[in-house]
Amino acid sequence: NTFFRPFYIPRDGYPRMMQTNWLNMLTSAGEVDVMIDIHKEPKAKAMRSLDMQLTMLRSNLSFQRTRGNIDQEKDLDAKIQDTNNLMDEIQFNENDSYMVSTMAVAYAESKKELDVLCEYLEDEMQASHFKIASTWNRVKSGLKAVMPLGAPNTLQDTYRNIDRRALCTFAPFVSGSGRFNGGIPIGKNKITGQVEFLNSFGNADYRPPNYNIGVTGISGSGKSLLLKMKLARETSLADTHAMIIDPEGEFVKITKRLGGINLNISPESNIIINPCAIAVTELQITDKDEELEALEQYDKKELVERDGVKYVRFVPILEKINEILGFFDIIIRGQDFDQPGLNVFQRTMLEDAIREVFDKHGITSHPSSLYTDEVKKVDGQLIQSQVRKPEPELKEIYDVIVENHGDDVKAEELIAAIRPFLRDGSKPLFDGQSHFGRGVETQLNESRVVNFNISHLEEGFLKPIAFHVILNYIWEHWIKSPEHAIKRKVLYVDEMWQFIDYEQTVNFLEKVARRSRKRNAGMCWASQDFVRILENVKARGILQSTFSYFFLEQNKIDKKKIQENFNLTAGELDIILNNPGKGEGIFRVGDSSVWIQTDPSDKEMMFIESNEAVLQELLNNMKKVQGYAG
Image 1 (spheres, rainbow, N blue to C red):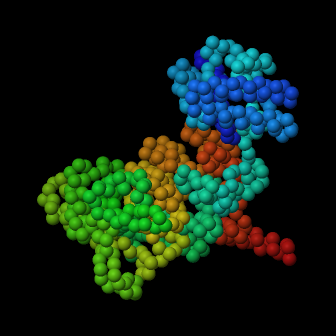
Image 2 (image 1 turned 30 degrees about the horizontal axis):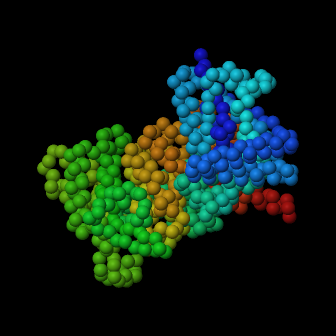
Image 3 (image 1 turned 180 degrees about the vertical axis):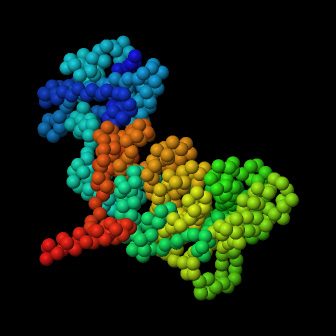
């Protein structure tokens, strides 16, 4: 019980200029068969046909001019010019004329599904200025024309003439090579043998819709190797700065070798990451951004101008309050995150307490409210003029709640949940002024690579909380910072699947992925449990905001999910499901795919390999090779 509908592109259904790979809209839409019938016209016949067409166009132009139809006049002028040019090219053997028919049949298991598919196809084609028409009263002829029966196409009105250049766009396979935008070498093309390049930020000629990259693959497929190779090459060769959230300690050695800063975070360290710390944000005054939209007309702000572009600087009070509420929502869910989050009463208590603490510090939406005029010693240096005020702290919010609601039964759970996170509790990482070590805070702004190593934290509870707070800190103080506005910034999030079940964290990751482009930043995330992300409704925003993907080896049981969500071809699925080599897979940028193999050299492997046993084996092999060569 299969329903089908034949359709074709009519003579007037082609755009004036055709782009390569337009057939992909038909071939990748689902159950659709496509037939292209091509006949080259003899030179004499083509010239006669074009001459007749030219006469008709000129006659029509004269008629439209007498009626005063200016729009039609411009369109006909363009067609006459195109026809004249094509006749000249054919006459001097610089071009050819072809009669082409594009027909297709869509299939579905029900009439409703067929209607939905056909409407989708029509919308997709119209977006590229193509029209499609159904063979309503000639269904049998339309079906026979597409089926591989060797029978001639009897629907003559489906044919139209095109030239050699337009015919090139009908090729279903454009190229085995990826688009070259400069950047860093990322691997070898398995089809062409050429080196493929990655430029996360694009160039003046082409910039992607966002700068985010996803890397997926099972354990041992080469994810970490690819990430570290990308990190090393981009920071060394592409003037890029990077911050890493490292759940497994995988990036500690590469960060050290790159001369970066490792922040090894644990309850025993003297590091404090304050979730209440707030910073100035800066946006172009014409930007449509959530923070800017939340800024009321009467809120205080600062206007600045650079290179003729106007920017607005302000302190996003409302967004920061929501971020702090998100932190408390996480900690109140308990050890296994199986408890409900903040209720209405707790949320109100917290919001009132946060606002009271902000008022106590004199923090408003104006950037100057975060500073005070005095002389202060920071890391052994005297700083005069504007100095940062002390940050609001967790303890201050706790004290306000205890003072205002200490006798309220509704506040007992909230007070008990916050207590272990104070500086004298068992989890003191988040209470106090942000501190990363003596002299480190100044280096954070200058270092090209900073790694937040959270591998020493408790898996079930403290690590997800630390991940959320660090993500918040990086967004607030690095990605959004006006000091880093023109820097190319990449946030690396390894093993993202570990944190995908925490609602507040997923929402924050989605916000970073969606809004980082305006801050000249991108997020590079990796995950071995890819389907866990696909099945999370809230995580879909992250996937939709990720333009480029590396698909390394995948689990065979995940084939259907990957196919449904990314529409990979049968050949691409075959590559990533049937035991590809380490670092081998599909590199997809938008709709363009490349079969790729990462290509770190032996010396580069010594630089990026973190497994000591593998590194030692590599060194021994290199010594043997050198010994043979000697």
